[in-house]
Length: 118
Length: 109
Picture (cartoon, rainbow over the protein chains, first blue to last red):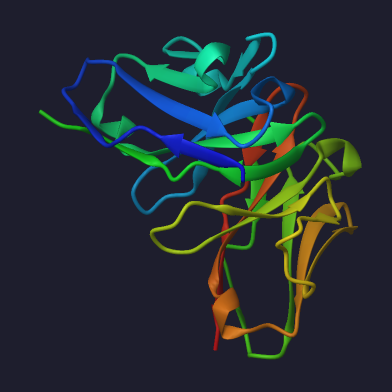
């Protein structure tokens, strides 16, 4: 069965970076894109960007262009999202979600809570 | 700045029918925006319901349907059940980027 299992909760100081992982299983990793979406407390969903798991090509939302990096390691079928220069506004649950080419979103990870606090 | 707009909240009676909409400030929503719909309950990850305007996942209950109505993407729930109380989000494609709507809180009362 398809699973996207994310890394555990993180607490970071302002100005630090965080790297969240998304371990995929149950399907051919390189056939899909992986997206990253975040949700601040009590707020809606915000698309951050995506990575083509086959080519490693990325598209980032304009809001995150200068401080997010999405990567993947096909040998361990894992995608990563690294966000730098954290502020309290980055406190949120971060999700990975799978997309088959052409807008077919289906499975989501369980979410990773990132708390930015001094 | 691309903005995707949904009704902030809607209320429906059990057994009733309700339509949630998803509009774009860039103009009419078409199938080229690949509309997706997601349901989210408190404390849970979002769950995909509809992809590319009208298509259901294997787990999507038959009472959910997607369409285009009046230049917007729409999600219709027919025969609403108490378990349908949740937040619903649409997602639209803008040539390399995706944008979520602000969400609709659906209350079943």
